[in-house]
Image (cartoon, rainbow over the protein chains, first blue to last red):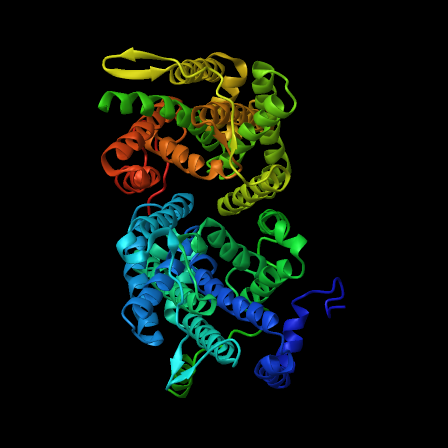
Length: 341
Length: 292
């Protein structure tokens, strides 16, 4: 029961977590660090790594859809750009993993900026359609540009990342920790982005574009920025995914992947970080529970989209935070100075 | 050769136009891009296949039944998923995501119950053709155009000459005012979904008959191309949808001729993106897209 007495709420967890923050953080950290050593089943670990990749993709789309309110239906395109650039560089040019991953992110950033340009002219549904067309065009380029991408045959034997000669694989848990590290990094990035001026501008654009323009926010620049950041994160996820699976072809990144990423963001809660983790875990792990569920997987994703929009558009974990709003250090210093003066 | 491709493009374009009409009708009233329309189209073709091949009901009854069932599917989609959202006053993006979800559900249920493989669809009109100006027009192409034109005329008649059509146009202009005049807007919307379903089913049967192939995922590409057609013509406008369909159909067959068949699917997207960036209202569109 809640203090207000009416109904037990999911958000009461939040204040509980807030009170016991230190303890919970320690438990979570230990759990995540111990996970690969406790559960030694390789299949289980592969699924966990896959969930990790989708968390990264979800975080990327969340920046665009959750925070800025632009729904993209072609994010598989950015994932594909990241995955293909990184894999081709390492397979064909023998480039190490991390530089090729950065190259993939750079390529996605350029194309993301290009994709952001239509936001100058179209909004809402039309933008979603353009992104969808973009996803399909990326797929077609991958299929038809055979001299570079191998066409429908795909790229095989993608090497695993190496750090100082140490190969990171699923078996020696290197891949797990790399993905975990990336998730932590990206989550911290998203968190601090959202608490910055940029983050507030993005949320203002989501709530009311007209009002944001009136307040002097350069709406178009911020939208393009959101596109670029989101594309970069998804490209990173794509590069990791390609290296994890070891084989990609143009159909790895079809429209179903775009819907899956969108389902993750919507199920968990648009514009939250906690929601993305839960969304990815539920949607990726659930079909793995049994083969018969696998068959109904896409029906399930569809049903999730429909039911969530109908009954809880904010997502499972998407509630308005009741915690006190935390001001950044700079603002506090400024306020203190003003109070002194 | 060029002429031949134009004939092919015209026949295909009429099929796209029929699907595009569905997008336009629904968009006109709800300002919503109905993403499930492609899957509805595939449903029409698949269920026609069930009626005609598996149940041996004959061609004409089979097609009519499939049109009826697909129309009912359209009503169901609106009743089950979109009407509650309208009542709640959800933001437009919620309806869009809902229709994506429905498209997923319909397509994958088709895959589960009928299998994902491509199956042969009967060709109704035979392979005989007429030589015309150096090209060959097959009977299938002629019949595709004729049947599509007949359905288009019926649609135009319904929208512009009947009482329900008047109600549709009224709801398009101003749903609130229409409701005050005693029009049951929800009924009008359901009827619109029915019409969209019927024309999608017919398009499904015609295009499946043209390629002599049917599979559950056929709606994805065709739906996108028809959507491009609707946007090109000016979404919400009936003649625009028809013209847009013809242009997209022809652009596609030209692309096959000049660029090779691997590029046939990308042309529609390129046109779509260009139209959205350069002239978002399309050829016949009224004001539509809000600019900031």
